[in-house]
Amino acid sequence: MDYGKVNDIMEKKMLDELNNQINEEIFSSYLYLSMAAYFENSNFPGFATWMEVQAQEEMVHAMKFYGYVIERGGKIDLKAIEKPQSEWESPVHAFKAALEHEKHITSRINYLYKTAREVIDPATEIFLNWFVTEQVEEEANASEIVAKMEMIKDAPSAMYMLDKELGARIPLYTMPVAQ
Ligand code: OFO
Image (tube, rainbow, N blue to C red; front, side):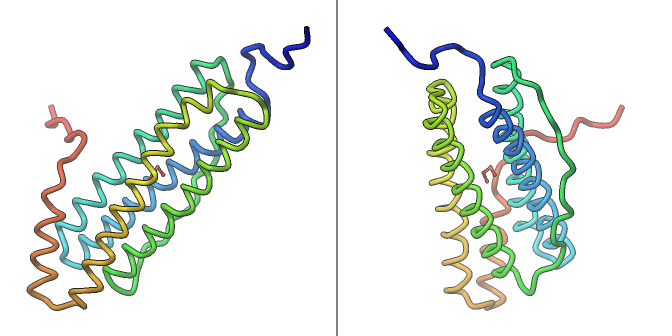
């Protein structure tokens, strides 16, 4: 009986796209770090903290793809990271850009999922499930912040409160104390 492709060797197309995703996730981290720096310079330390934690999360995403490629015996192919934008017109413009970026990442994850189906790679499909769920949360978080900012319309005291609220986000890790 012909079972089709049932071995465990990853298709080149799948491997290439997983390697591209490592780059996408590291770029996401870079972009959010750039937004964190923009907020620091604009005197919104809470928004900066939120973006810094977001940048940490994106590195974790990159490492999940990295670890998975290695686990499957694939070759890691790291590419150059694009320079991110460094200035935005206002905080709401930056968060809108973050939301648009998350929508782009969702379309990338969906494309990876489609590719896994095409090349009959159920292990990768299952691996991607976590990211499918994560993207729903990522878009919802950014969209909620944009909605709040649009409601506030730059009113200074409300922006101050929102900055405080977002600044309560807990970092995934803190820098070790210098020896
Ligand atoms: Fe923001 O989820 Fe990864 O990129």
